[in-house]
Length: 444
Image 1 (spheres, rainbow, N blue to C red):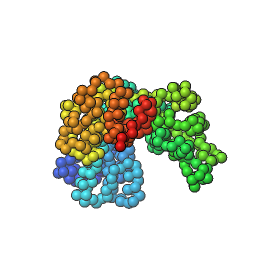
Image 2: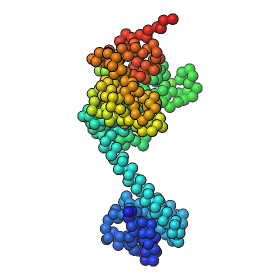
Image 3: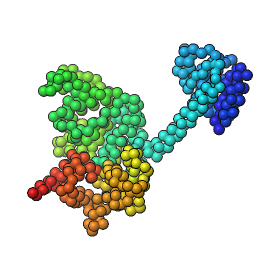
């Protein structure tokens, strides 16, 4: 039962409100002043306070300050726009003028109690979610993921540059968003840029902006993505794909906190926090002359390494159910569950595409399943289907990739192959080049 305190110096009004609320199954008590209310016990013992604006001693506006997290409705017979605005500005949740209608007062109290209850429930739920999943959207209870969460919590409040390392599909962007959201810059923008997705000829203009006439087609001046991130966080995904010229410009941003648009004579000040990510071996690229050593040392201040899914076996059941619930909500499907054989297939697969591959497999199964159960056949985990057909159990990741591509490239496009593997089309192309797996020409 809700507990409401009425602070009103006119006894007749105070007792009338208590009777009205009691008939509505609300526990109500009264005091004629703030001092009397405080003498009876902490204001935090109540779920809601109704306080007259004009009280003996300390007035209704001071009740708001003393109430802390307890919502306060201000009552007054001196109704005016100014007093209403002042009360709401000081933190009152509502305002009601005397003489008031009984039904209006009761509805106002019930609405305030309902909203306060929802706020407390949401706060408790957020606290529980943050405790279970400190990085929103990433489920992980294994020791490597706990180390990731601990490092995010430690580095986020600082302005330190962060480098996130991990294979494709491990959740690097989610970690970057968590760093931003838990930082003092969370009211500013988070600008995410996939460096591999921007053509090399355009990447400098996209990142640093350009002036009118700087190159053919530059019909007007344009702010770059680095400048747009000023006051917030710039997330450069796949930073290893930046051309050397763009790397030099980025280094100047980090050293001098300023940029120069393409074609501009003057520099502009920027205030960014850089978070970068890559799945590649940056020291090896530095050694090969493909990545600037000075930039590498600039961005590698705090490193966060995300483990691949094959090293997170204990997380797989909860992660699979989490992604299944997410897919059902997104696809507007009723709640579904995984059969024992489907979960067994999930546990036995190496997931070379990591969480992205698992999410894609589950989403496809949700679409293809008619009932409320996803079985192994609907899940169609590629390596497990092959194993059931007598393929060897001990394929390496590269062997699995080679076998999967050669088996399916005749029926799937490159985009479809990449989606099934849980990787980007660019990553598929790079892996083909490295393994010498050029697409076979179809006969006929």
